[in-house]
Length: 328
Image 1 (tube, one colour):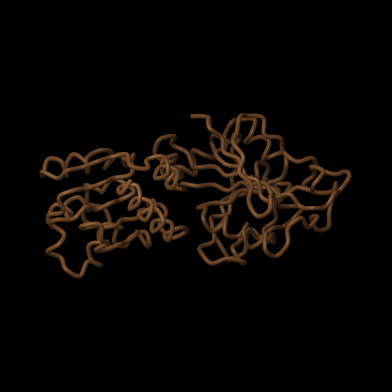
Image 2 (image 1 turned 30 degrees about the vertical axis):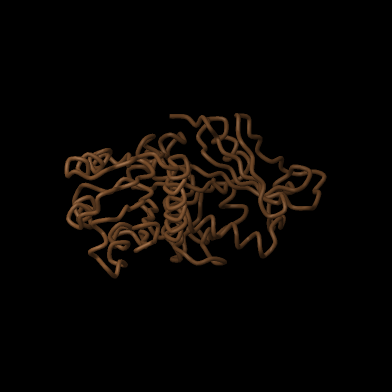
């Protein structure tokens, strides 16, 4: 129970890095001695110190490290990247016990950090709150194990199941309010890229930027197989980079994004594009906002046809679906 208590604190710390650590995963670390927390840290930003380093630096009485346990949500790295190996630091500081949430799937780590620590004589326990730790870095895991971005589908629908009225122009039906729009922009800020199709780009002329939340603007991706999108669209302004995709299949698109190190993709297109991802089993999460209004008729919402689990948020206005068996 004590190990789980401190691992939960490490998970809490790790979430502070949301929207800033990609393509690195969110990681938290807690250093404990005699049931007292000596230091804490998390990975704040990609390219900067890892969670273990920040936790060690926060310890005031470093001699206590030789009697301490460090709790870290992800296996410490064992290779030189933008920073030195964290496993080497923990060994040098003489920390005798490591409790690790989950193993790192990245090829340059993938068990090497655990092995290095054990070979140095450290006591290493792996798998404490493993499900929670893996869920925290689900985008990082999917990217490295499935060789594609983690895919989140998002749409807003009316109470009677329509995402818009049928139209050939004008503005889209407003189904979000200022608060739910802020939450959607938070979702955008937590993804590397955001995708719409040709029709949505032409009909809605969206900017796809993060305006109502802090954080980076994702790469804007638009499908334009027939090169019909004019350069005057807001998608092509200088507020964020834009990628035009003119390939034939979703798999080709995902392969291209994977080559560009895009770990997470938010799909905010129309019903046809969203349904194409669903039918191909190319989705990991779906976030659906239901507005308390009825349109009576219009463009029908996408239909999730696979098995899923459901969570409700914000008074059931947001429903969160997860796909337990996404395509490999």
